[in-house]
Amino acid sequence: AWFDYPLYMLLFLSKCSNLNNFLQTTAARCWINFSDSHKVHSLFGCIVAIETTSHSFFHLLRWARRSNDIQLLWTTKTGITGLIAFSLTPLIALPMAVPFLKKRMKFEWRKALHYLAIVWAAALMCHAPQRIFWMIGMPLFVYAADYIVGSLFKCHLVESAHFQRLGDSSCLIEFENPAGFGKQNSAYVYLMLPWISKTQFHAFTVFPGNKPNHSSICIHKCGDWTGKLMKQISIPAHKPAFVVGPFLSPFSSPAMDSEFLVAVASGIGVTPAISLIKQYSCTSRRLNLVWICRDAGLVEHFLQNVEFGSDGYSLIYYTGKRSIILPEKKLPSNVFLFNGRPNLERTISGIIHSICSGEGLPEELSKKVVTKTPADMRAKLLVERALSLYTVDQLFDYSLKASNYYNESQEPLTNEINYQGVLSTMRHLLANDCNVDSITKIFERVDVDGNCRLNRVEFEDFMHLLLQGNCTEEIQTVKRGLEKMSTARDLFQSQKMNPSSKDEFGIRQHLHSEDGKFSAKNWSMLYCGGSAPVLSQLQDYKKKFGINLSVEKFDW
Image (cartoon, rainbow, N blue to C red; front, side, top):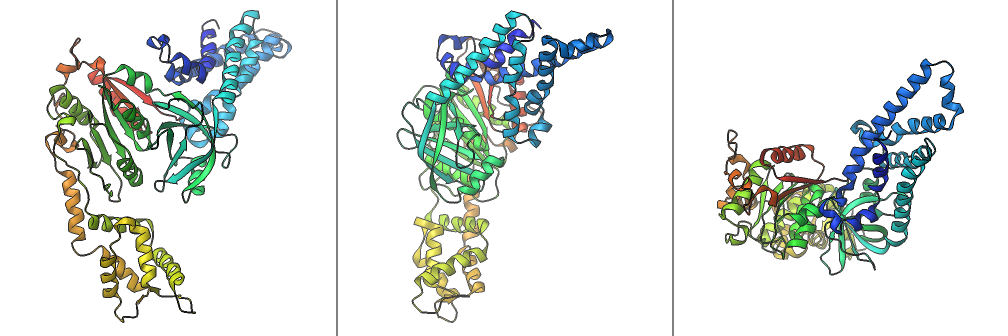
């Protein structure tokens, strides 16, 4: 029992978010990383659950072997409180620790059961001699006080947050920072949307928005709560939200302590790296991004809206099916877009080799590998995207509604659409890339009888003609152009990996130099995402080359 007392105390102290956030800004952070206290909470929680179960089991076994001692279980304070704690332990620990249960139980149920820990702690306070009352009671009191302070002073009402879908599975939230919100670099918040659930607070990374004094949150659809959010945000909207925080994320300490950073992200996990890029872009730190993503809308949004730093590589490995529409602005020469998954060992080693050797430093690259997409090609790619999102029948129905809006005759159109309806649809799909002359020529070509109307079959021919001509060849040219390798780009191509090579780029000589500028102690790898294979590769890389790895993963 004495072994467990410190663990009992840390179980509650590790979840004092406001206290840990404050301690992380003091000199105490030199010895303890308070921003990653959830790791301590999870580890000690499993140990306490095992020890509590074994402690109770052997007490029951001892009492059962002695005559009349088993009645101590319900006739003494120690027996009753011990039975309460023993009964609650599996309900508190197993749903949060066992993957099988985590996948099959809703988060709100698991969290509600986890709060039984307060009853569990109250039972322990009365379980043993007087000293345990204070050893458990004081941390419980600190936790309760921390929770109340956070609810009163760090819970901010955002009256008009802007919600916008970036694709079928992701949503962007932007809001003006409320008074007293504080810094949001390398941080996370708890978000509550009262129009979805008034009791659920979920943790998400927060990063600086494009507008001054604004913040953004990116959410990926992965459960009931996020599924409801995606259904309600079918179009951009302004809605209220409650934001608790911000709190320093597990990335904050290693990012602050390291001169060279490699941030690896999968999917929506790129948001902490975006925050670090904005935070450290004007410093001497080199932050390199390796992003694996299959959501085309997410990639297009960040390519268009994020200013990637010039002192580090930004490598985007796109694994989706739809063609990426590159932004109108020219991408920096240190931003590379690949099709397919990376070999992380070769990719990270290539980054380290480039920076340590000085060959192909990101800020010295002059070749623009990724360039601006011509307007006519962008239009064809937009049509390709539209046909991947909507059926021809859906586009025809949309054009039919627009045609009736512009129809000057008294009889409504039912089976045919007019030129104005088609043009309205194209302007909606193509926006600034809508070429009226080109659309008019294709319309006249399909309109054989010359009545300025198209039926369902003719409209389908119209859509296909938009993609014909030299379109296929041009799109393939873009894709081939994206695959061209400069000297630096060649370092990150997974296909070039030699399986028998233990250290292809010879980076050990730099990393294992104790006093060298590029020694392993000056490097850190950061990972945020839900991919177990990616995390496994990074853990293997850590063992092989000795570079520290920090993980941010809100899989509670």
